[in-house]
Length: 335
Image (cartoon, rainbow, N blue to C red; front, side):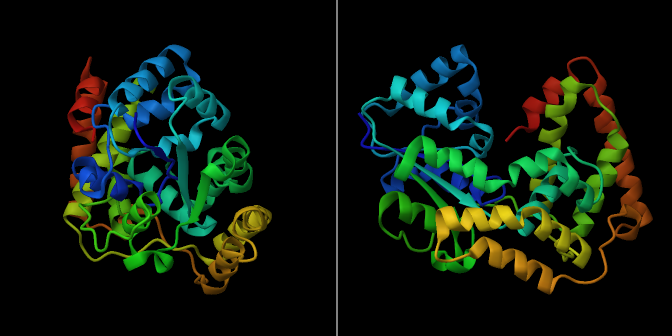
């Protein structure tokens, strides 16, 4: 039986793609086992369905047999019920020691990074202020309650780590994670292309692209998200000078007001006597520019780029609406 199971829980936009890209294919270099045959996302998403849960977690137990320390990683544990995971582990891996690791990004940077991701994949259309008002955003960034449930279910087996590159060895979340998992700093670790946050011009192109795709049936939404993620990977592979997304003074103040109590509660529960989450909100307001950024694609793209976004968006939209088109494109471009 494996010596230990490490569940990397994300969160979203905390370097999970980089961690996964290193472990996929070279986990054995660090004395780890990465179960390639298992869908890590499916492990997280299956917890609420008894039949799917048994299928995926039994398959993981079989894959782990005789392997060294095993790592599974999926940001989608963000939506999982910690008590369900605890019961699942007890049922299918009762003799395996388990540790859980999650990274938490301060509220301001997390909101902007999540907003950019949602725009990129076509899951949200609007300015960051509207994203702050989205009920899903408010629930996902209410950290104290969400991470408190993980601690209640797993006690000191659950570790919450501040996502702050300045505190990571070599500024690398991959290196930090590997050091925590193995107990030894692996030194510099080359990281394949990750999932960087797009700048304003790339976001403008993605927004124009999704506008041109237009409304889709509910069944085609996952394919749209897949295509948006693939678009992001292509943008990352062909980088260009761009303007980073920042919160203006009014938005920063709203973020601080909305999440101030949550930041203080999380600091008290996980980081005391330090207060990194509250300090980050103070810094967000102090350093915010007065004027808001424009999110109108016409302010960032020339006529040719706007036309290309419209043409490609219409073509992809046509494909997504054809019988079987969404399933085909989702399978073709899914990472």
